[in-house]
Structure formats: C-alpha cells, structure tokens
Image 1 (cartoon, each protein chain N blue to C red):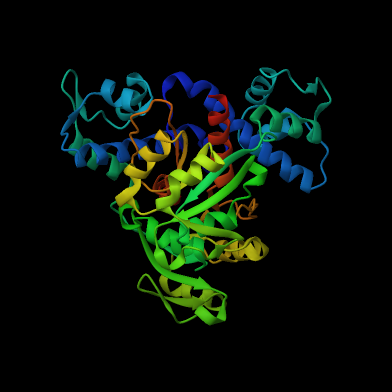
Image 2: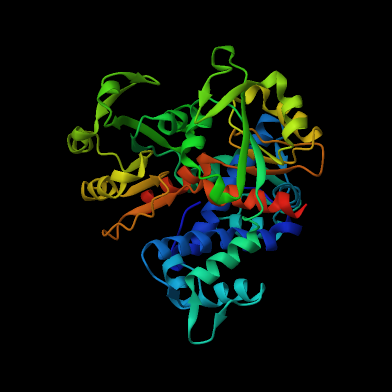
Length: 213
Length: 213
C-alpha cells in the first residue's frame, strides 16, 4: 500500500516495518508472551534479526544483549515513535458499503486516529446514524473541516468526484488522504500526502503465489 | 500488505513491484502515452531506473536501449509474467458491508480472478442476490468447493469463526486466503498462502507521515 518518493523511501520503509512489529507485539501480548529475542521475532515475521535490531537501534535500542526485548516495553516505545498516543483527527468521505466496512473493521483509536465525522452525497442517508455518527452532507464539507480541523480524510467514494473532493480537502488544509478509490490522485499541492490502498495489487500477488504452487 | 517468509521475499518483492508497474502502465495507456523510459517511470513511481531495468531484465528485458519501453508491449508482458491471463477461481466468504464493498470495488477479472460464489451465515440474506451472485449458506461450503474448485477464498467475516473456516478451506484444497479479518491466521497446512490486508498498518503510516509534516 502507498506510494512514496525516493527521498522518503528509507524512513517510510522503517515506519512500515515498525507497524508490523507493533502488530506482532500485540499478538505476543495476547498470547501471554512477555519477552522476545530479535531472532525469534525475525523468524516469525520473515525478516532477519539484524534488520530488526538495526531498525530498533536507530531509535535507541530498547533491548539488552542476550535478554531480548520486553514485549510491553518495546510495544509502548514503538507506539510512541509512531506517535499513536497523540491523536489525529480524520473525516470519512463516503458512507456506502466500503465506508461502513471501514467504520466496523478499523480500530481507529488504536491507530491514533479520532473520527470527527462522516459525509456523503446521498440525500436519503443524510442525518441517519452509522456506528453512532450522524452522516452529514458533502456540501457542508468546508464548514465541517473549518470547525473540526481534521488532518486526514478517508476517501471511500465512487471515482467520478474523487479528484475534485481531494483537491478541495487539501485546499482546506486536510493534507493526509487515505485513498480507497483506485483513482490515481495527482494533487497539485506538494503538502498533500496520499496513502493508497490498492486491493488489486494484493489480489494479483496472491493469485500469482497460488499459481506458482 | 502480506507477510512472507525470507525464502520467498526476494521474488515476492519483485512481484509486488510488477503489480505497481502494471498499474502505472494502465494509467499511462489511459493518458494516451505509448512509450516510456525506465528513468521517467522511476521518477513517477519513486524508484530508481536501475531497479526497474533490473526487475524487467530478469524476465528478458522488453525494452531497447535508448528507445524506452512500449507501454502496450510491456504491459502485456507483465500481465503474462503475473499469469493474469490464466484465470483463477475464488469464493467470497462474507456478504456484509466489507464483502459487498469488495464486490463493487475490486475488478476481479482484471486481476485474473473469477468469482465462483458468495457464502454467508446470515439466514435472512441466503438466496438473495448481491452483484448478480446468489448468496449461499456457509454450511454448504464443502459442497460448493468440491463442485467449483476455487483456488482462493476471500475472508470478509467477523473474527469469531475465521480460524475454523480458514482451516476448513485449506483442508478442502483452497490454499490461497485473502484475509481481511485482522485475525492472524496460523494455518497448520504449509501449503496455505495467506495474503493479509491490514488496514491499520496503512492508517498508522499515513498518520505518522501527516504528523511529521
């Protein structure tokens, strides 16, 4: 997921690995495991121990040679590196199947994100509730953004109006775009940050691997 | 997306880049561009030209020094490397918001996948239509799989029954699992191939990047 330019690529690949470490540490915690060595973690994640140590050492280490990492301590440190404790605000654009599925399936709070609102353009659902949030009309986007100042928007709308809405959001100061629309957003403002979720890339990869077997 | 062991990591990262090239070539084609150099493509994708040339050379090249690549020729070659022309069959498990959103948002055919059926456990929707497919009861999974022999299953169900259903699918010979459930599947059969879609990893990465700005 996500497209990045080469300048950012190094640190972003670390960020993406840190999110994997975090998810793995949560699973270990759920399984009642309190200590883990970089070697065991590497085996479980399909990485090398030196890769993991290098990633963590660049933030100060967190482990003791020969003793491994405390799962709880490492987890809370990675959370703070990733800034998950400082909540950011996001607005969901699109309350169709995909938007609703995201509301149900994503633990926003655990990702350091607070949802401040849901917008749609479908008159019949405006004012109704979805997961405890009232759906507002997309025409009110500018007012909502000015009031609640979200840093991010989640785009879960059909392709037709995506580019226009993305430009509008960025012009309002909503620079982070989580893009589920399959539309390649080329936003003119260089401050815009787009994280694409490309279902097709993932499915093609799975199909290839299954075909290779 | 996706977790892989180190043995597969090299070729899988190539596969993941090939899917990105393919998507980019489609965009170029839509924009009416018929030729592209590895350097221009590298700039647009945030990669290096030598990376792209190396990936493509390992399959025989497809370009002429100084002339760049023919967009159409390269696209059709990548499609055949990825095996998209040989259709694989998939079954969708879960016809809730997420399942329906995937039906609407994923162009299965373009990914080399034919959907053979949709299952759910919710009595009230069994027999109804979704995107032209009749929803069948999950109790019939074994019969459906024996009849239509899907190679892949798409898991878009709540966490509770995921592990049991995944084991059942793999025991029936459905080795490819596209996993949207956030459940870490540790399937006993080593032939199982799981491609996870972790929304949270992507959102945490976006949140981090926005926070860094």
